[in-house]
Each structure stands twice: as C-alpha cells, then as structure tokens.
Image 1 (cartoon, rainbow, N blue to C red):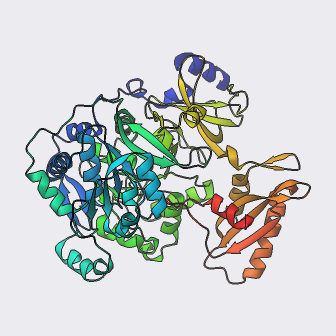
Image 2 (image 1 turned 90 degrees about the vertical axis):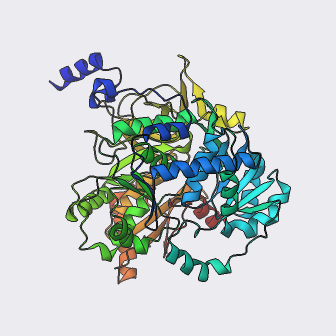
Length: 574
C-alpha cells in the first residue's frame, strides 16, 4: 500500500511536500511594491491596533505609520535620495524600525549593523556600502567620532534608548545610565533624533518613491559559506515574499497578537521575521533592546506575548529559569526556533515545558540563512517530524545535491542543501566571485543557493539538517561531523552546552576536541567529567571520540547566540 501511495503522490504532486498544502496555497504572488507600501496596505483597516510596544509604551499603526512619514520627510530634508544608503546602527527601539521603513519609503537602502561593532567594523561597513547617513544609538558615538571623517557619511543622527521610553523610565534611565554616555555637540555633522524629526514636520514636498519588488531594500551581513564578512543585498520582493508566505505558515497570527522581538534588527531573523512579517500580519512587536536571560520570566509577566521566536540558547534560558515554574503560558500560540539546530531531546523538553505551563503547542524549528532572506522551511502543518527542519514554504524549493558533482542525490542520502526561493538575495554587494560561488544556475536556468550545509530529504519532502559542510573533519580517512558528536554529548543529563572542533594530529590529520559546559546542578564535577568521557566511548565510534575534553563555565557566542566555533578554533591555535 505504501508503494502505491508513493506512486500516486509522484503523479499528483509536483513536489513531495506539496501534499501538506491546500492546492491554492502551494505558491504565492510576490507583491510588486516596496516593503513600506506592503506594510501600509496590510494595515489600512488595522490602524487602531497596537503596532509597537516599548517598555509598555504603546503605539498604534496609525501613529506608527505617521512617524514613518515624518521620518521619511526628515531624511529628504537632509538630502537623502532614492538609491542612497543609510546605515542604521541601533538596538531594538522604535526609532530603529521607523528609520528602516522611512528609508524604504523614499527608495533609499537601509544598511543594518550591530551597535556594539568595533570602530573598524563600523568604518568598514560604512565605506563598503557607500553610506551617506548614519543613524546610531548614543552608546556608539565614542567609536563613531573616531572613524566618521574617513567615510562618505555627511550626517549622523544620534538616538538615545530613552527617547521612546515612558516618562518615569526615561527619567530614571537618564539619571543613571544615560548621564554616563558621551554625547556630541550639535553641529553640521551631528543631529539628535528629536531635532531630526522636527525637520521632517516642516518638510512639505512629496517623499514616497514608487519602487518595485526588484529594487534593493536592505543590506544585511553574514559570513556566508566561507566565513568572511559580506554585505548581502535583499530586495523589496525578498522581504515581501517572506511576509506573504507568513500568511499561510502562521494562519493564527493577526491583530491583537504580539511578537516578543528579542532577536536584533541587524539580524535577518530579527528584522524579516520578528518585525516585518509579523507587522504585515497586523500583530504588534514587543521591542527588547537588551535581552537578559535571567529576567526572561519578567518579559512574560509584563507583556504576555502570543508569539516567541529565538535561537536555541533562548529556549535553554527558558528551561533553566526557576521563576517560571508556576507561570501560566496558555496565551502563547507559536514558539519558533531558528539560527541553529535544536536537538530532539531539547526540542521535546521545550514542548513539555510549554504544555506543563498551559500552552498546547509544539516548538517550530526552521531553517534558512541571510542569503535566503531568512527561513525557507519549517516544521509546519503536519510536517512536524522530530529532529527535522520541516518542509519548504510556499513557492520555495529545496534539493539535495552531491557537493562535488552538483547532481541531485536520492531521498535519504546526505548532500548539500540547495534552495530556490523568491526571497533569495540578489547577491553580495560588489563581490561577483563569491556571489557566483553561492548562487548557481542549473540546466533549466533556475538559480539555487548552495548553502554549504549538509542535509537530506525523505520521500515525503521533509528535510533534515546534518551539519555545516565546512565543519566536516577527516579523521584517519573517515568523515566525522562535529554536530553528530555534539548531539551525543547533549544527550548526557549533566551537559548544559557543548561545542566540538577539529584539532591537528601528527598522523590522524585531525581529531575532535570537545568544549563542555556542565549543568549548574552538578556537584561532583570530577566524577561527571569521567562519566562523560566513558559515555562518549559507549555512544561514538572510536575515531569519533574526542581526543581532548575542555570543561568551561561558558562558551563564546556569536551575536545571535550560536556557539562561536571560529573563536574556539582561534583559542586552540593560540
């Protein structure tokens, strides 16, 4: 019977994952407008709903869209025109998203960077993107003043985290943290947010520029498949495609719902999913400028978010927060995990946690990269197989190929994950070689992102992530995947977190080394360390057992909370 069902499915469906979607929801039509216009159109009948919640100071869509228009006029008053690049160096504040949409409204391009970036990183980003304006949090001013004259930026707008805070909180912030921050004097070069917005209120010329889905909207940043920093150009259509897909993927989200926006705006997941897609569904975003895992419980008691999204470390913080023991979370509709894989055991632990606290949901694991405009597949509808990354979103396609020959491999066989999607980037800015390496055309003229990630697909169209292609070790001629060793280690009850890298060996070429963080409740650490080593010998092939174990209090993390393997490798070299 199963063989017959498979034959019928092949005849009936173009792609194996199509069976999970209703016929009219397998593809989308990407809106041919700017990101700003699509957001505005989506909320034309939703103007009195809450758009933004910042420390419990709320702004309706009517007020939010008005602020965007004022900011757009302010940008034009300062000489910003269509095609110019405006760098936004901000944490999650209302000013940051207002500036993003306003930049888009006038046909300019937003370059989103980390507010804690080093001087040289800020300088490199401003120069490489040819930015002419910088909108920055005041905490960055000390670094900005040292490098700004070496760039093409002629105007810097300084914003304080307190600008949009409620009155009492603003007073307290300015009295404590705010007074310690170095501030620039007003000049031709520097302007404060309030003065900048006043310029917009007095600018009366037309500002909206009609742009198409093919025009660039934002520049985001990633190491790509090679690890070197790159400027990724996403178009209006790329962002609109994901927002359109969200209407099918998240049918329960609408006005009255709220997203806990913990992930930063300079990250694709934070900007494209937690803010733009959610707002295009008419829900509100709860902006958290600085996330503190120890105070995670207070975010739930203060805001009651119906949607939570984050990387696996965020959910680990949820599991270990003792203040959430008796909390009712029945209002939570969706919990989304991305940015890294969440092993089945942790996945199930999070599911049990939510159900224990009244939320009848299962965590949704997704997969994507900045180059693909964010997530391209997830555990949605009935495609919720534990350990998988689900099925492709509407209008997306995934194939698994042999990394060497680029030919598709059979179902169940591991190969490189390749993605075709309307959300895929146009390329790396001014980097044709690396663009051509990652974006490759097949024999039918279709463009595919070669992700540098290994995975496989079942006959039902469900995709499983295995590891980074570049994180494969060769140990005595055997292929060893560090993520497999990590998955085994994470099953040990006393391991809180771990990371595995390859280290040189005189005759095996490489051997694994494991960095391990023990659970806080572990008492006899020496005994546990020996247990873990014996555990690895029992659960791994001999050539996979780490040659070295290093037990630490914490592991270095990337900006979005992933284990920073490159830093571990650099530490080991030193």
